[in-house]
Length: 477
Image (cartoon, rainbow, N blue to C red; front, top):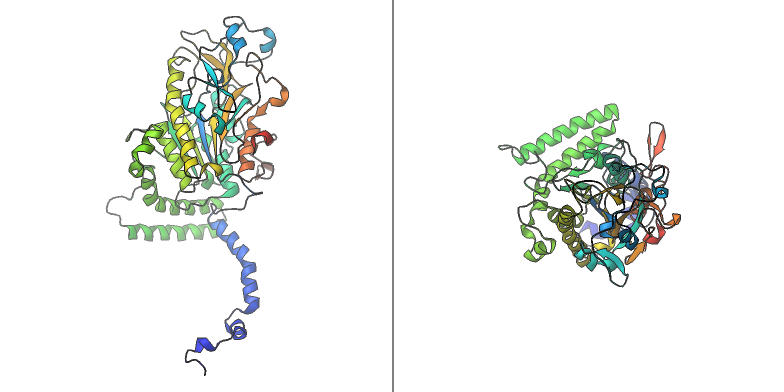
């Protein structure tokens, strides 16, 4: 007996013939799906995009020690340098070399710090970094990093953008350009700052360069409102603001249809994100949800801006799906005199050592470390020679400096590269690792081929690694 419900009497053939689509319509819909997705990407440039290959990392946290930490006091112990302390450096080392401040016949400076080997890896780490020493088997240390400029501004630009000149996209911007982001309510690239001043180079270090401005880094404040002027003005209701947003978006859409200017698409996306961030951003920087145990582990003092607080915020950002986070901590420029390798280096290490360790452990406990790449380091290192000033210090050194990496596809528990007996050059040329190699490796771990991630500008294809860069195979698990 037929059902009284007419839908129960429809067979599959009837449905496919009469539903208004049919098999052809369904196929056409599938074919148009990619086109629709492409259009959606054009209206929202931050939509997730497919990587070039299977990624090992989903996010990057960059702990940038602005100013140039002394590798000779932290990671690269040289007994011969201690033995020759006070002697003039052999001319063969410095012939044809330029330095930022060193005068003629500079004298070698042996470290006053004690080093020990830690973990099964036997990594040599200074007494200044007791927390880092506890995770010797969880990090990979590179001792033979190389960069191209001994001045802070250009060296920071190379570290962040791959180029010494202003106007190029930062690594975070390239990452967003290549992959997009999964969180529509927060910027995909966030910058956090601590220390007495901002890093030399300023906003150019997290710039979008010649990429659309939607890819630039967004600085968040760790005290007060996360972003200035983010809150809705008094007397302006949510409904009224929503209507204003819709009107602005419609006007911008009309303008985009007329001009085809991609920056208008960026403007639309930024208005929409700012509207959503009014509710998400304040919650992000509200640490009242964190336990006292967590706050103590990082060394966070409630209500006080610090590198420790920024490390905790970085973990929270990763949890929210933010793709790239850079933490700048300044005042590592220890020449002697005003800032030296005695009290001031001790202070910087105390401010950063425990929080960096807590960040790694926190990510690990929450199952986030495996797909979060963490990079610690500065724009260059310090010379084996001391400077003649009122207190102990070293000049900028670009031939060798040390960094460490963890998580995100890194093979931990190893030291890559060895330096000569004075810590001036790599022991072997094959040990030299250029900053472009590190950038190529970071992109590789994110699933991006640095040779294919390009953007045409002024008639040529540019990329993060300029005309260099090789993946550091030994670093990748």
